[in-house]
Length: 133
Image (tube, rainbow, N blue to C red; front, side):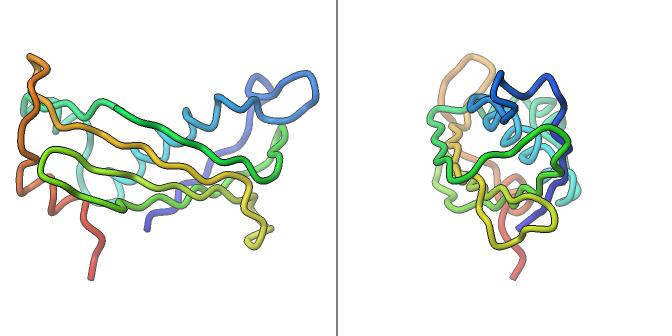
């Protein structure tokens, strides 16, 4: 599991002062990038090797509201690795309130070549993404 920290900006909130629901998907993307960095790699390196990991499915379950200026802790892990796809899972908490889950979600990614054709996840990418034992 990798933890990413993100402060909610005013532009992420709606008229009710809470984080607009679609922004959680941006937070997932941010946390995914931080996951790669924490593992010593980057999505840019994967793209440089001619591979893309497009999102093919995304879900979010909202439990409690985040608000402007909250610091969010996004716990990210790879929950499944298959031959040509992988799944990231996310749990978002407010800093200082570790027992209150704000949102959980997941994104499923296909591994494709630049021409859009599915391809096997390379062993080095699998090693980068797998949880440490």
